[in-house]
Image (cartoon, rainbow, N blue to C red; front, side):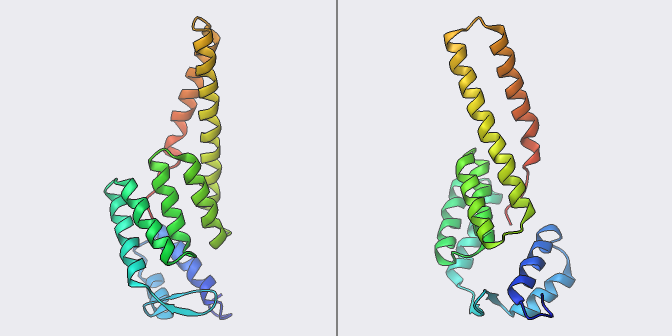
Length: 178
């Protein structure tokens, strides 16, 4: 993509690599060579908005400090200033996920895919969260049935199985903000 002059696409893939290998100096050099302190967009080059950068960094710090509500607040401000940044939507989703707000996490990740359509991690996270939403609904239904039939051992077993399945999949979605 770099050689074809599609700088935005080249940067998208290089930034994805940096998510996996943040210490890769070779990739950092390529990104810095092209961007020279600027954000490359589809239309061309635009200066990095210092307000966006501030809120994005504060969102990352809040996320790392496990203050997920504050992270969402900062990432939302960053998103208002740069509404086409994949990472911002991804991080909003990650913050909502940590707060156990699965529907909002899914919605944010779906928005992220609009700006990075081929991001496999985001697609997988959406799939896992959808499974979690389904399991929650299943457990809620079983709990309602148990209130009506508290001595039904089969319902207790099904609820226990659903709870264990839900807990066994939690480590599948462990990540840090981008």
